Length: 555
Image 1 (cartoon, helix red, strand yellow):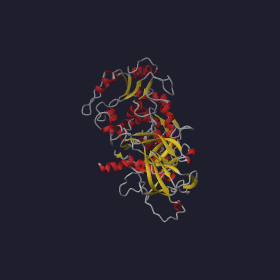
Image 2: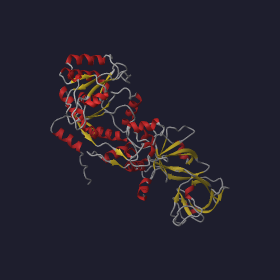
Image 3: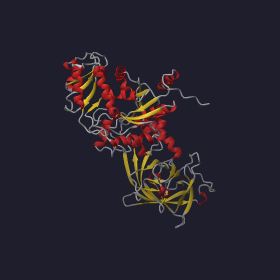
Image 4: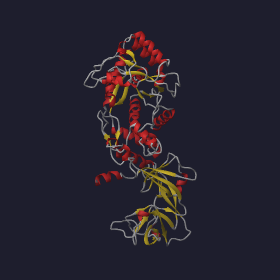
């Protein structure tokens, strides 16, 4: 009998709240800012918020934190929605912080009226200085003592567009001596004369994150507002606004964000990679964005399994990207169709096989599939392509592939014995010669010969051609963001290798987007969106084994 999985600390809180009758149903939310593409770290948050609601019969809202019109765009809104759906989740309501601009404005007016907010004319530099330091209290200014009427008048004029960007701000009036710097009269509103992707030019003042977030949670009756550990210092202010406004008491809970090695997950740094052309875009398969993982061939099931495996913790740690790749391999092994592709070809001529003869062999589509996977026909003829690395002129001991006098099985076909080879003027092997054992056909082998090696191949006259892109980790060090100098200096120069002409078996003529393939002995692949009817392009999702782990052991 399998052990029941223990609860994480958030699940424990939810179960206590439900048992105590604090809430009839839980309501969570996923609140991204639409200023970039979501990455694997966001996938953890998505799986957590939606997963908890599903487990406890609640619901999850998708709410866009669109309070900064300068950095936000509809493109990002659309990509976020696609990512959440791809991961397998449906939101209860699609909402926007901008839906609440009038309500938030009214909340701000309420705080002004009870003497807990004021308009400040200070510059950002002056405000920063007046806030003090972690060891020294802040100091008030003359604007802190403005009358309620004056503050109401100025705030309305800010809303009406009478002042320039940065000329005035609205601040909460709390405690300039608080040990929590976030409580030292934080900014609530700033002036930005910028076009908003939803509200157009209706507003020229926009709420700050700390003022918009908790109140948006409250408006939506969010019971468990989940965010990452860096927001712990914000919780006191979150609670203060809700208390003073006397609105629904949403509560914030913090968990450790996902930190993955061999990558960066700061939106600012990811944007640099895109803008500086180190990658082809947000969905470049080397990026950690969900769009990139999707294009690379990752499955939503593998990402969800990964997020479930790493769990929910209260302390930051770094997760090995190899664990994510493990879950990708595990799922693809079950669903990927087996096909043969020769990436670095050399011709093998089977000299005793009748010229012009073609056999249709039978090959399994996926021996690991629950339904058996079915079979396909595989044409075999006198000349086949094999991998260059599967032949050596002077093979060492325990080389179980082709070399003079050595025997090997051609997958799904016959045993062949190498009888010679040809070189070009530069000394490169251009053709390998072999003889086959007619009685050794796979499935009906009566030869009595046992060979230790099996290699893949593609019939020369039946082969299709394709471009193959071999993707690897974008950075060559584990923590590029923590190394000295510019993080871009640590980009892996071998993160992409393009093979313009690869030979693939004819069954791939009917390849489809969304289908996953295992190219035997080479890794897992998927069709890329750059493909066309006359040009197939495949991306390597992941290799068959973790080669980085081997390198780490060597070092």
